Image 1: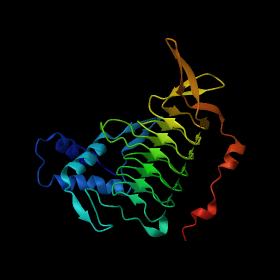
Image 2: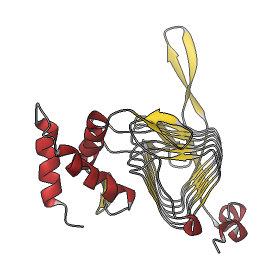
Image 3: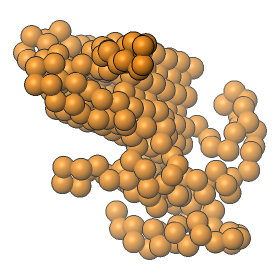
Image 4: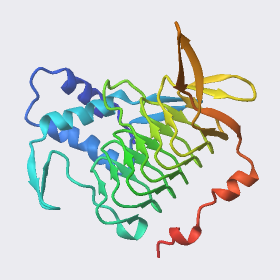
Length: 264
């Protein structure tokens, strides 16, 4: 999708002291393109993920310009309506909420009650289990499993900040917390209860190497801790551990059930 003109218009609107009357129409074009998966809040350029700050600015403008209004699905009051999903291509269990401006690819399953916020992108074949929050602008790859009770933090501001990224084939266990633009690379496994932020040290127990806010490809990560002494006091700091690399045995245990992904 050619976005040069849209990008320029959004940048001008974002910096303007007063928004022209037709400014909302430009913003709504961006939201509609997000909704259809034609643009994203972040993209992989080479080996690095880069935030599309102008798209995030459009989302912030959407909140600024939209009035609070009564919605009929409920009813409820909000600035952002719910997304209309093509039923044959997805399974969205009642009492889940998916906001307009998020993209849900075909063959995605969302269990209740879960919430997908504006700017998020959930790619084909992924499973969002019960009580999951997919925060604003989060990017979830293909065939990803997000376990029940997990929170994927939203990163909407500042606009140039990279959102949370979960790449293709990753498995995130239940009750995990992924925040502040951390990155989970392809086929990584995050054990239940693991908390990761952009500044969390993740220690490889075999090499001793530390990774900050980035889980390497195929890594198997579990909750852990390391000792820290301050004066006469000793503490255990939460530190996720890479205990091994994903192998056929691990993959077999995590294999997705095809019968849950029949959409006919």
